[in-house]
Image (cartoon, rainbow, N blue to C red; front, side):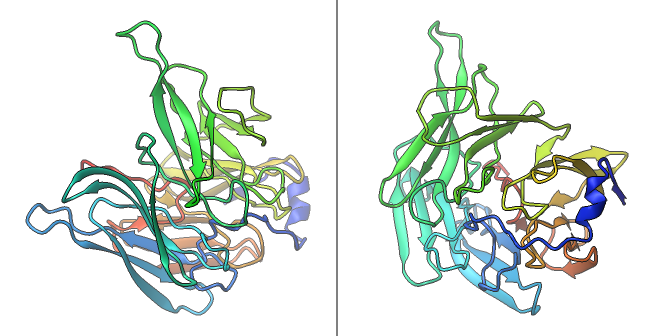
Length: 338
């Protein structure tokens, strides 16, 4: 069910937009057909009797139905897919924070679809929520994450603030303080909010999106954009096809998953009732029309429910198992304790 909050949304149902967001570094298009693929990460077993075990990547083309399997990573690695070589295909990659031989580590392992791989490290604090986008320089994905710094000046009190970090294999990087309140740690919400070809540093917390435009300074500054939206979790994407990332997210209501989208083109806010409260949001451009589609992964039966923006039709796929990690989630979850 779709509830219209603005009349101009009715017009958008009859228009075909030819503009797509320029930063496609996180489109999850493993086969290069211009569409988001259904994609999963299956971490190697954490059982102390057999760990470490190899991890598997599975993807399914929504156009051809062809399935692909890639072996990359192992137990406790964190998946960080993106197009790191700018060949139009998503590359498999992992962040390795634990080495079973030496202990703590801080490494990124990239496996390029164009051939070859890259392993590099940064000496910054660990952060488990990883997200790769094209933040600067060449049109290829850069690794990124938010880590914490204690800025307290009166120990033993603590004042942790969030630092947004993005870098590449050549040691080019940017850092930005993205929280100005002690011990309130924002969630990443990167996207191309101004259609300049790059993802901007952006976060979501306490019902507010905050976006900073480059050039970036390291300290906290007033964001260029602050947008309030009554959602529990961010799910940004280009839902209206104007080339700009829209502020969007999900919240639960009466056992359902409600999507709220603030369209950058018209400024209208729409609601879409799509999925159960226990479903996982997996937005992406599954039909290849240049607009983000509302979609969910249902762990209870490993079903994928995709609402195509091109014509409003629904695609249903059964793919994976309940414990797989769907890679289209706005934030790929990771818990080192389970």
